[in-house]
Amino acid sequence: MIIEAKPLTALLSLILETAGAEPERARICAEHLVLANLKGHDSHGVGMAPSYVRWIKAGKLFPNARPKVIQDSGAVLVVDGQFGLGAPIARETPLAPRTGEATPFHRKQILPLQAAE
Image 1 (cartoon, one colour):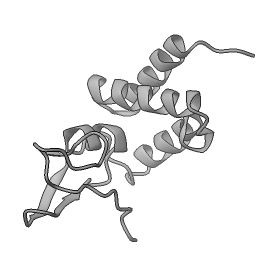
Image 2 (image 1 turned 30 degrees about the vertical axis):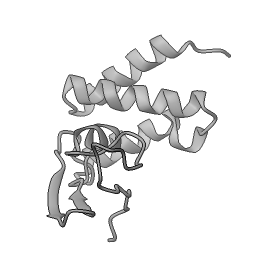
Image 3 (image 1 turned 90 degrees about the vertical axis):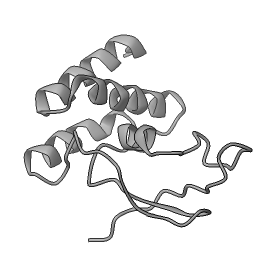
Image 4 (image 1 turned 180 degrees about the vertical axis):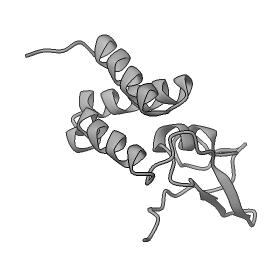
């Protein structure tokens, strides 16, 4: 079965909104999940949606969390994603270059870290 990206993104957005995500955050996350599948990263794609909903309902994932800068020492920026949805958190991280590489205007190196439990 072939499912077009646009209606799948809309459905995932609705699912995430129903679970408690703000509309813009749901859209960003849904776009990211669909894009992961389109790029061949199925383990990080739409198949994550049921887990996201389960974790939101269990209070383990906070869909409307905002990034919090823990430390900014010039070359290193430590950011706490506060157990939020990864794609919106990444987009909202201050001074984060989109590629993770330094540019003439962004001299910080941003490295994603997984929270330890």
